[in-house]
Image (cartoon, rainbow, N blue to C red; front, side, top):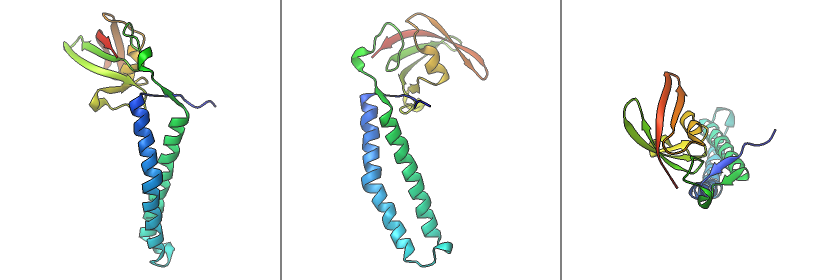
Length: 158
């Protein structure tokens, strides 16, 4: 099975590389030291410090593997190739909720960088995927659990 492509901005790529470096160079050593200290407590069959450190080590290694996989399958979003004629990954989009007459601004990013609280929505989310390919002035219908929400695309920028 082919690996899923991960869309990243240049900024997102740097964040992932920094996190990966931190996990490998600092966190691994910290957990290895905690395991070493816990082993000195004696019998590991009833050693909660050892069990906890080993669990943290497994979680750390899982996160490292996930980040390395993201980087292997990364497709960097080239800001120069983002057009403002239609919504694409990397676009900054202003939409108007037609029911509540409210405008909201979102940046369409890959799922690895999505942070709805920061206005960064995934190209795989219901709204993000619905907006892709539409132009300014067009109405987009988004299926949500409560029904359908209609948005008008007000502006598209980089």
